Length: 627
Image 1 (cartoon, rainbow, N blue to C red):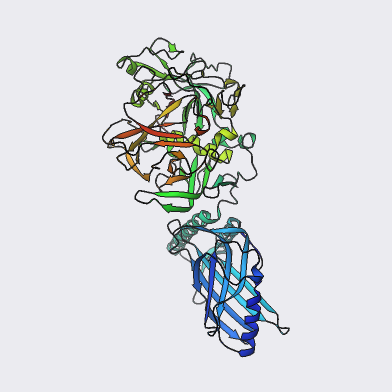
Image 2: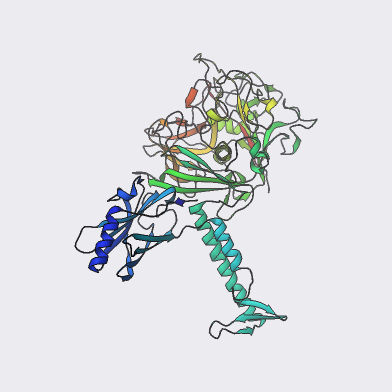
């Protein structure tokens, strides 16, 4: 919530008011201005620097010693949002230059959003008095900002059913309404009652719309089943919001279903969960099914606070934003797309606990033996078990599409990890950790090995088995051992993981196409079921400094700009190849030799659809067939 200091009348303002009182002259012009600049000595200030907005006052009344001024300020025309750190009041008697009369400064500023985000209104009022002792007093107010507690109290009062509140009451068993013209209560018929109820429903809907709009501005302060983080990419700062305020990653989030509800489990090929971590029949060797992580559905919201349009491209650079998740539906929230497949809502998904190895039809391949040919590879099954070396494309044709086929071979509902399911883990990590930098909060991951230049140097899966459903790193040297986020081992590091459903049109465009089913790779065009995300990815390699944003695909975490470093604001690197003359594929997380460039938001979109490598594998996901 914003907090503002008391108004300060400037030295110049005091003298101005004395002159006005003595001369009894009118004020010919007066303006209120806003600025993001911080004024440290408002009493001696003579001007407000870096004015963001300016609006004339309307003169409502003036006597010899009192002036009442009002003005309304909106965010119409605001291209880039800003923090309202300073409000200045200028006056002019028609003979002198504008005089800075008074200044209000912020302890905790409000944010004025860009016009494209949502509308806001600020109503300023100033009462200026020169007392008998020659001292200037000024009382000010500006409305338009409200806490959710205040708004909810207003709504409760409006809909409480008290006499006169909304014009309907129960009097001695008769339903009556208040006639606005006569001021008398009159009996109401059933049909009239229906009309009044309909009107009330419309008003309720309008109020709910206002709630959503205000929540865009002030956040979900009172909602304890909403958990969020505010990211200021420009200032490189993070702030926990709503129910997450005051919490720390780990045990504090265990009681929240979308976080603590994540559990390792065994899953049969038909999708049946056969055991959970801790059950007596739970196994990690594949004998009781694949080792997966149960992820209950959740809802999310992304509120852009400051952004600027990508020049010569699509979408926006996100400079400041609030990210929220909730285990229950909320006004303004959307079900995360990981739980919507082919237009149908799903109650949960199952993510692989471990990076994928292959099963050749008779046994698991535990040593990444490159035994599959182009044809036989398409009959193998991608798997998720412990104590296996992740499958790679060292010599076998483990392209992204072939890796996806091995996942789909496991049966209906199975696929390779795809964009929406990867993004589900990303937003949960961001909100719980309170930062994008997963390496500094959980562990570096397997990223600091010296590469031999010829083999796949991955660690075997299962090093975090003892962590169960918790986050952390395996025993050993940070940078050489596996990490886990709530049961999901190595979301970054060890080996790159292909991610399906994300096709990048290079051709100097660097535009992203997205799908959640019927995955396919085409070197020259996006398949017909893939949708342009409306964003342009960064066209230079580097550490992420801003995320690309479009309203429909606000759940994506792809960079539009790469001017950061290995710590902030994200700490992860981005590789691209926009000069290519073909479509490219996406992979996530980095590998054993990538060091500090790795992380949960580290993307690589540099390779053609035919590419395979000793440093790239994949991982499973299962989406239930029906809700």
